[in-house]
Amino acid sequence: MKTTAFALALLLAPSLLAASAGAQELPNVNLVLEPFHKNSIYNVGERAGWTVHALLGAGYTKYRYELRENNLKVLKEGVLDVSSGTGTIETVLDHPGMLYAQLSFIGAPEPKSPPTRQELDKMIVGAAVAPQQIRSPVAKPADFDVFWGRKLAELRRLPFNAKLVPTPSDEPGVELFTVTLDSLNSHVHGYLAVPRGGGKHPALIFYQYAGVYPLQKSLVTDRAKEGWLALDVDSHDMAPDEATAPRDYAQLGNTDRETSYFLNMYLRDTRALDYIQSRADWDGKTTVIEGMSMGGQQSFATAGLNPGRITAMIVNVPAGADMSGDLHGSRRGYPGWPIDDPKVVETARYFDPVNFAPSITAESLVALGFIDTTSPPFGVFSAFNEIKGPKEAVPMPRSDHNNITPQEEGAFFIRYKQVLDQLRTSGHFTPNTGWAAAQ
Image (cartoon, rainbow, N blue to C red; front, side, top):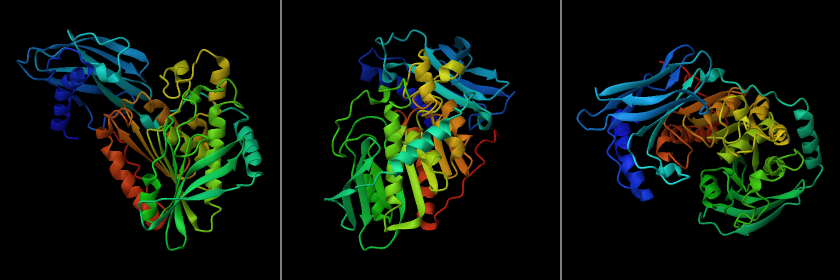
């Protein structure tokens, strides 16, 4: 987005948000936050931050600000005076990390308690310092591979018992099926779309974001129309046209690796992979998995549990990375497991994408937002940097989670289309590795 467009967004946002919250109208803040580096990426020891531009004569000159490291540790806070037309928010980090800054107009009405994101009168920006060097300080459990290897062995002793029910499709060139498979202690459910006319096709598997909701058939039928053998996997043991799973599923069983809800979810994800690669209409070469948010979390787990079997992994704002981050200086995001229970903290290590990443050999495209509080960028970079296969990050400096600031995710949407087309036609994509240079 150009500076002028960014300025317009900042000019409009406070008054629009206030109106939606039913609060009194906020003043036009007339601010533009310009990063010292266009890509908001800096080197260790380098001055990092923003120049704050204000419209002279607007009458609003003082703003509260807070600058945090990894959205947890407060580095600076105070009042920014922009009566001269400009001000700065800056710092220097002597180690890798993320910066998260927010400004709010002094004198704005207090939001309701607790406020929603849409009710806050804050402007938020983010930056990265040496993100290619970010690592989680939490070690992978010594028996991590043994635990998951045992579960996969149990899973693969079960027959699929696949049940495919023909389902109406809006695409005349596509056959659609509702699929049910036996999995370990649960069942896989989803929609499978197959191009009509026979032949063999590259496989594309979708894993779903957090929540309990029916699946959209068009997700797979649109891709099958392009030539993919496409499978959309429900995150829950429920029919794809239902919404019957427990709403608090993410917290269930989180004191033990044997009872966590994510255990059967991750196993179902691999079961779906096993099934689609067993089909006679798979081309035997190309398998792509993708997901957004919790779907990205599932993709990391599936790619890590199945090295060498997946051609490419495409994820946007993957959740779950660095699950207990608050214990070592980085605010955690989804699933928001408590950090005051040692049993929960220990369980988290077996489901954290960071610990699956070292086994990932697939070509990987990973997009992340610098101001995302659902999938915090410190955790995503921690996982991304552990991937052993060819990889490309898509940093989105002004992006929160995808459902909050979709307008800031254009870089991912464009790259996603390019990568998916390349994978469909050639079975590979060439990662762009130049994103980290702070120029």
